[in-house]
Image (cartoon, rainbow, N blue to C red; front, side):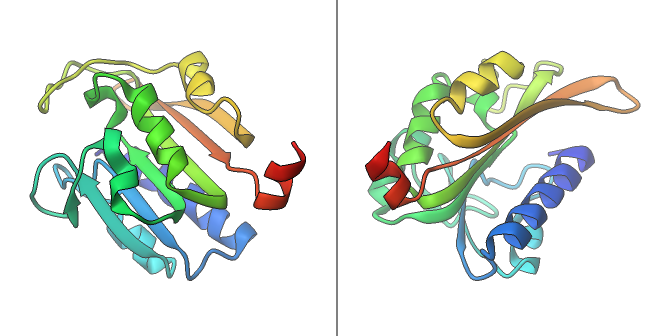
Amino acid sequence: MHESSYRTIGELLTKIVAENQHGEGELLDVGSYDVNGTYRPIVESLGLSYFGTDMTAGPNVDRVVSAYDLVSLGREFDIVLSGQALEHMETPWIAVEQMRRVLKPGGWLVLTAPASWPYHPYPLDCWRIRIGGMEGLLKGLESVQVWEHTVEPDRLVDCYGIGRIPRKCEMLTN
């Protein structure tokens, strides 16, 4: 993770918590292995419970589980975050569907992935995700926002996307 991603995710989570009073909720971080930092301090400073998953045991991983089998956790979350991990998944659209399935009604999905970044296989490096791709991953959610951010001074680009699962009453009427 790089400083710009840490800062932007912090701003997004702060806004979500402030607007939705999620101060006592639970956040699932998919791809939480601490390579160059973790979002855990931000999450916990906002009063959220943090639960980190990754495919490999290690620092900042609360449970080893495949991003393609998140329902095996047997629980739901108020916010699901995947920061700088989608590019390392062979089929990120399947992982995002799993993320949706573990969100509580009204919960938020927060994603970031490189749009333009050097090759970095840890262990794989499969994708770059642009605005159209992020919109596709978030299709069907509401309150969707997608944008790219250039990381200075390297001129590298990250793509961000957020969206909300409808609340139960909204899901029944749609």
